[in-house]
Image (tube, rainbow, N blue to C red; front, side, top):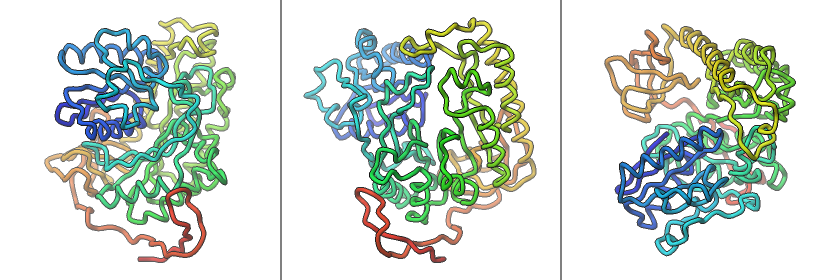
Length: 456
């Protein structure tokens, strides 16, 4: 949960990085509409537990802000607006499309208690322009929204609608604007990022978009990708991940299970062998890469042997960062109608996965000991390495947003401890600057250019 505050406006963000980006868009719209004494709760629905936590957060917010107006939005509100509108603590419910429209925050609209339209009818995603995320060294940029897949456990397509992409020109313009304001790292985010471009003219791939960003924004020091579906990574993207130093050596993969039968029952598009092969090829080409993954414990029909296959996947894919989701059934999903695993078994399996994740993380941290690493500072004494490993500076501080070098001297509490060596804020490496040529159309809002790489 993240909370950002502007004067009398609080925004509480639950869930994913895309929600964090959208909260910043909402903050700008609400500020422009002169919203005050208001709390916006941007909910998540990835699990049944997430929806329960959203309601708990709303009740707690009312207790701490008894006179404030409470607006509820996000995926849980989009999927089940009536239940949130029925809560006495809630003044208004906005859908996922409505929350990104400035008009929704004008006072003339406040009398409408529920503003939630059919998300499945939405066919475009705007490239919302923001200056940055409040209090964050890295900035998220949305390139895609929605999902056309129908994994049997997942409710998110009903909260986000169909897959739709932001034109490359708008993405590049947004990132250039952020870099001009001093942003050091941009994280591309979306609901199903590897589906990027399928709905756009010429159907550009995610790899093509990433290549255009790196070429046309040469002063961007660090570009990071959020969650990817490994089986849909195109060849151009794979080459950039393994060859481009400005693309950070860290990926989070949507794996979900390590058992082929469970993957079929989930309606996933990859096999266990696909996942292992993809991770092995990545490590062979870029050994320093750190891999994370989402894994579900206790999916319906999962036997002990099936679970053991998932448990072994932590080692077989050499995973470092693991998000464990104890399975919880959403009433509108096919998996909810399958034979369920007892809750006590789910809890025990999730605990074993967390233990395996803790051991994997410890090995990852240990390999950094006594090494010199570049760190992007998030706070005065806390930052992250290029592979997303957190590091705390011992006995020193740095300006948030700056790039420094540090020697790793220890690790504790799932973080590295480092001693500051040098500030790299003004020491940029040579970059490739584009020279204008003709006709490489980046999409709406970007002039047609082709670049020739010349060393600056």
